[in-house]
Length: 361
Image (tube, rainbow, N blue to C red; front, side):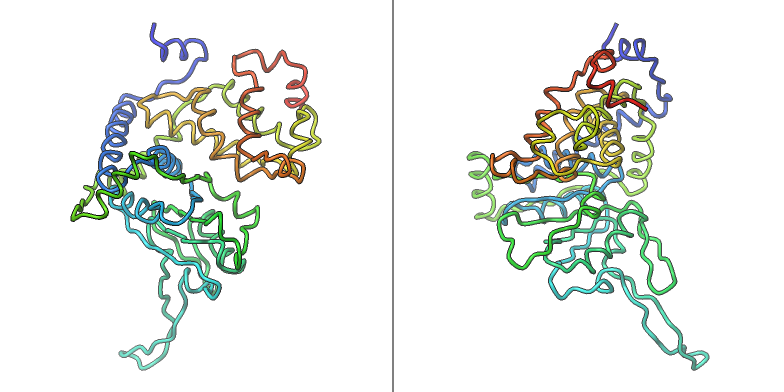
């Protein structure tokens, strides 16, 4: 019996339809081709690219954090090309106004009647892939203009609601080393991002290849792999991927342990955190696990998928306190410790007295 059959037998997982299984195979093939096309332009950063695709197929948004010069903008524009999506870049600055990104009503004359009427001019938000470059450099009023767009996929100007393009994906970048003149994102807005992705320095071999390519006449254009319509179909397929009750309980255990002074929270949470993650962490973690399973050619999600997605989903939804900061403890350290100390085998959670308190109704 294969691993997949064993999981279905043990947990009574509903099977996807034959057409859905064909779509799973096509998605795995498309994923491999997207990575190949991205590799023609971007050197390395495979994990970042994977997380961007998982968020996109999960209908989520991403926040990218990394020092300047790591090709964040190039990576996002290349991804939009690979997916045949309309791409717009918005440079966030201290003088940027909400209407600069959402659009505005203008008065124009109707030549046939001679009267004047309002006409809505769309802002750069009306695209499929939005790069919000240095989002923490603009005041909270403009940052807040993104909230409705990210959550509702619409913008309201005056009394009129305008639907945004579909699919719609916001990628925001932040510079972690230059904080003068910045406006940190409120927790409510950070929570709207499915992932917070760290873009790290390249390895020696990767940087060698970057230097070789960028200082020569080398140029490459990626080929489109998926259309917007196909992406929408795959986003629907992600929601169909079955998960067992055990995986949901395990996800709840990870997230609910982060809530300070709640029954069952471990001592290191009380020592290191100011507050924990909310329900969106559970929702995004399960969706991300489903999307990752599909990208790896599986029709079911596993505990490993949840664990692999825990850091990008949770690192911006929990806050360390002064004690943790003074000890050099980051949110990633906290999430890693949670994964290490949370039983993953079915039945172990229910037997543990501490988790009985966490699951108490």
